[in-house]
Image (tube, rainbow, N blue to C red; front, side):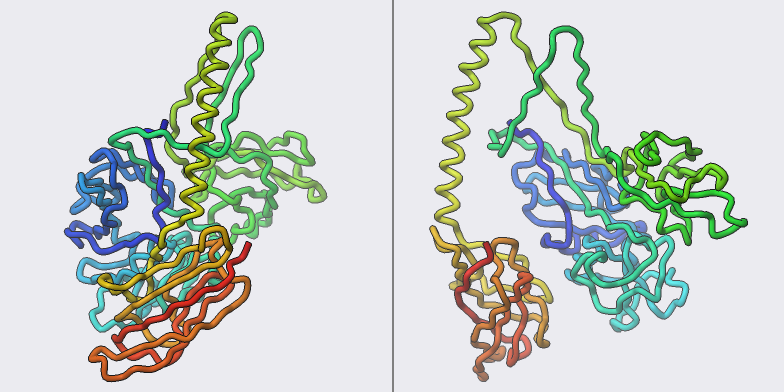
Length: 443
C-alpha cells in the first residue's frame, strides 16, 4: 500500500523557469504536472550536497520546495549554487545542466567566483557542482553540458559523483502497488532485535594517503582538503562504524564530520601504519534519504497462523492478477514521447511524436515532427532509454522544410547504439524536421 512516492530530480525532467524567477538571492524553477495526485505542501527534497529542502516560499527563500494542487513542483536554487545572477535568465538547457550537476560562472573572472549576468551570451562556462568550493577551472567547459560530470570527460578535483536531487511526497489517495519481490523475516522464540537503517556502506576498499605536507606525519582516510583527493571514499561520511586492516578492526583517530567538506576524517600516525596491508571502511553516508516506517505482526496461536496463510494465498492471487494485467499493458504499449533537447519542440496538433515497441516483437517504430531547434550536425535531439536502443548506429532519411515552407529537402537522422538521436544534414533554420522509421532494439 503506497502512501508516499519518490522521484529523482535530474536533467531529464522538463525544467523551466518559475513564476517568481529571481528574488532575494535565489532562482525559482518548476516542472508542470510532475506530482499529480500529491498532497499539497507534502514534499521533502534532498539537494546534491545532502541538505534537506522543506516546504517554503520558493519565490523568496533559497533551498525550499512547493507542491501545488495541480501537481506542479517548484524549487528555489541559491545563486551561490547555480551561478545565475538576479539579472540573468537561464535557458531550459542551462537549468537541465544544473540538475545534471553543473554550476555556471563568468569565465572573464580568472578566480571563477563571478555569477553570470551578461546579456550578450559571451564568457559562459560551467564546472562540476561537486568541485565548486575547490574548483579546478582548467577542467571547465564553455559549452552547456547535457551529461553528468562523471561521464563528460572533464577532469576536476573532487573525483566523486554529483548526487541528483531527490523528492519524496505524500499521495492524496494511497494505492496498491505491485512489487517485484517481497521478503519475510523469521523470528526465533524469545527476544529478537530488528534494526532498520539508511545509507550504510559496508567494507568499502580505501587507499589511505600520507600527508603531502609537514613531513608526512599522518595517514588520511576521507580528507576533503585540497591535495587529498585520493583518500576520499565514494560518499561523504556522517559516521564511521569501523576501519579494517586485512579484515581486522584497526585503531584510527576519528574527527567530526564538520572538519572537512567530505564529512568524518580518519587519521593514523605514520609509526602505526602498515604500508603492505589492505584497508577497508564501514560507514554511514552523510547524504541520506527520508526513512519510512516498518510494520510487522506475528501469530499468537495456530488459528492466527492459519488465517495468515489464507490471507497470504489471497494476496498472492491478487499479485498474480496484477502481473498479468501489467504484461497485457506491456504487450500493447502506447506511444512514448521523449524529453527533447537543444530547443527542439514537437508539433502538438495533427502529428505523432514518439516511439514504441511493436507488441510481441523487439522492433521499435518512431515518428517525429519537430521545429525550432539547433541545426548543427550531431546536435542531440533526445535519448532513447535502455531496451529501446539499436544494436548498432543507424541512419534514416527524413524531410525538412523552412519556416515559410518554401524549401523542402531530404535530411539525415542518426540514432546511435548509446541511444542518442542526433540531427543530420540539411535542416533549415527554425523549420520543420520530419522523420519516421523502425529498427531492431537491443535485447
